[in-house]
Each structure stands twice: as structure tokens, then as C-alpha cells.
Length: 301
Image (cartoon, rainbow, N blue to C red; front, side, top):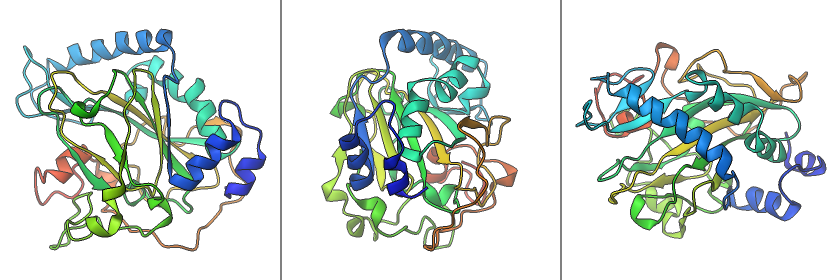
């Protein structure tokens, strides 16, 4: 949906200045947007997931494990599509202030695309290199965004997410390496052109929400603190933005209408988008791709 039409739609949780800031900069940070009651409920479920991971010795479509993960000392990189692992996660995505926020920035008709909980474990939780989201899952237009929720307080030592202001209005960068292998990150030679020296870092208290546009250049540093930095992400699109490729994390919630109704007309943007590998065989995590784990298997995220 075009920006002017979105802004003409009455907001539910944002003011017009906040909405305009998102469209100008390509991201938004809302301090303590989710209240303590929600956080307590989410942590109860999340701690259960961490306990469940103790039985795992290798990554799969549910858990992405860091090196050194053990039953005694779990180290998780990601819980994939958490919305199918407990109904509370789906409630947060589909009927909460998070959903209101998506509606305010995408328009009245909103589709759920996928979800993930990135843990950024204490004592070295891995970096996420500079990248854009839309090359992982191209759509017919760029009304696609990710809403992240900080489950803990996040400061500079913890490897907060950062984004380049205005980068969503610039080029879509190559996410393949020099040997034409998908690595899910900008080439080092392209990083200066992306303007990363202007990065703004997203610090905040538990309950803070980050929103970034699908074309915004963003990333995060390793977590060198003794505290974990779990970021719970839900990705949404306007209903008139149709996915062009297989979903990298398929589940029964993919494509669900969480606000409004299904689009009668598809909107096409004239600017082309980089195509990813064929994800129809599945995918583990961006961490595995960027660290080139299991090289030669393009569809292992």
C-alpha cells in the first residue's frame, strides 16, 4: 500500500509524527511499548522453550543452536516460527499492540509472514552482519516490515541492533559472495556505500519495540556481556504485497490475515528485487548462512 494511503488510515497506537518518522528513516523505536504483564507471560513460555532445547544436540527447523550448546548449559541462536510452538506467541503476533502497530504502518489489511526469536546468548552471542530483509523473501512491493520486541534491557555491551537511516530508500544490495553463493549479507566492499557510519543503535528497556522496513540496512554486533539479548521478531506485509518466493520458514500460520481482509488487487513496485536461492527445501538461520556453516547448502539458514 502506498504511504499516502497508509497515513490517511486512522492510527491505533502511533501518532502521525511517529508514522512519518518511520517512512522517512526506515525504522522506529518505541520505548517500553509492551507492558510488564505481557513480558512476564512471554518469559514463562520462553523459559520452557529453553528447557526443551536441552534435549537437542543439533540444529533443526525449530531450534538453531550455537556451538557449545549442551543440556547443562543451553546456548540458543534462534527459535524459529515460535508462533506454532505456543499459542501465546501467536496471540502476540495476531491480536496484541504489536498487531496494532503493524496496521498503523502497513494499512488496514495485514498479513503475517513469519516469526523468530533471536537469543543473542550471553558471552559471545553471534553478530548479525549488515543486510536487508527483502532479498530473503521478495514481495511484489515493499510494504513489508519486521517488529522486534526486546525481552531484556539492552545496552551497547549486548550487541543491540542498529540501522542506517534512510537506507530503505537506497539500493538493494547483493547478498551473494564473489563465488555466487548466498551468504545473506552485504559484501565488505559494499558496506561503505551503504552508509553504515551513520548507524543508529537501538538501545532500550525490556518491552521496547523496534520496527524496520524490509529494505533498511541493519545488523548487530556480538553480545560480549554476561546477559542474553533475546529479540522476538514478527514479520508482516500489507495484504497487497504478495510473496514471490517460497517462505524460508514455512508453517500453518504463514499468510494468515491478522487485520482486515485479503487484497482483491495486487500492488507491484517497478523497482526490481534481488532473488534468493530456492527456499522450498527449508532453511535454518541467518547466523548459519553468514557464518558459512554447511557451505554448499544454499538453503540452510
